[in-house]
Amino acid sequence: MKSLTVLALAAIIAMMALPLSSATTMHATIDSQTNVANVNTTSNYVLYYTYPAGSNASKQLNGTVMWLNATSYVNGTTRQELQQDMNQVKIAGNTSSGTINASTNSTSNQTIIHVVNATISYHVHAFANQTNLTVYRNMTLHLTITNVTKKTGSNTTVIDMSWRAFGVQGKLESTFHGNLAVRVPFLNVTVNADITSKMDVNELGDLSLGDGNSGAGGINLGLFFDQSGFNSNVATYSTVNFHVFGVPLTSWVRVYDSNSNTTTFYYNTTTNYTVNSTINDNGSIYTLKLRIDPSAAVTTTGDAEATSSNLLAIVSGSGTTFPVQDIVVIGITVVILVAGSIAFLARRRRGK
Image 1: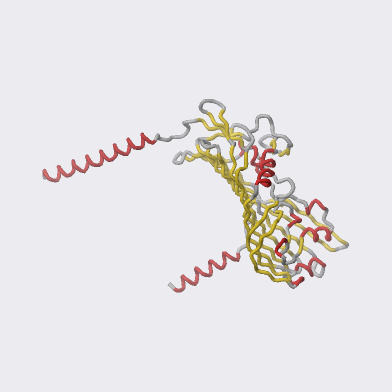
Image 2: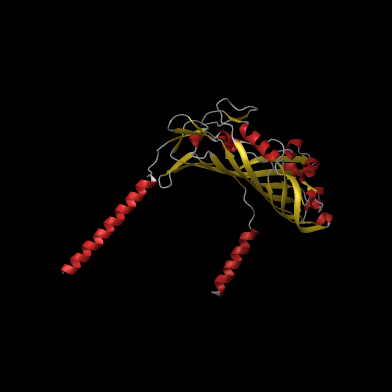
């Protein structure tokens, strides 16, 4: 028993030591009756920044370690900006290309969705040695949105999913509350404290190691990108981007569950590097890579079919379901049959 306890503790410690995920996911649960969808989008990545030993980056980053866990309740202004981003997406193309085109105006037949609630969970784990900095960034955006469905007839509900491939334009700035643990040997800084800090979690160059309003001092990655010769587009690269999910819904895998009368659509793609740059600075090689593993799932009530690149259609009464009163009648019938069987068997035993 003691050995099992030791093994369990070792397993917990090992799990705590595991790096954060690099999966970029979207999971939407849609209630076609209430016209409300709960959406969890995770904009996760792993950043690899390599540099020559002995370079300025090596001297300033070597030995840096950071853990940051924080949460923010998004205010009305930022919710409006998110809503604008989600309504500006226009998906064009066919089932083979799935091309994404950003449009400043919604199409005439596109449903305008409303963001009524939003929360951000933000986690960063970074560590550096003489030649490499690795950053795991996990950001989950919890959204409650409405007006995603519309009636097109007496018995048909259509769900507009054109918003799914949205990307945040500019900053995703909010006030975060959480805990920061950081060690930066170059600055002789070691901090473990609760923080309240205003951060932009979208632009890559705004990720600071131990910086922000915590008073800890720190290192801004954007400065290193500039010093290494990467162009300014790297520092302003938008990380909260779900364009990969713009593949037409007709290409997603569809699974209908008759027990729950729900339909789920799945989409997965292979690991890819959204940023993969190399700079040769007088023989000194610097590389920057950003890795994501995209996957998405959309679950809706009813038996839904993809009727176009962006639309799901649900026909009322689709799927095998029983009205509540029918379930009650069936239950009573079963009880009567069981009771009758027991009485019949009891009479047979007395007759013997």
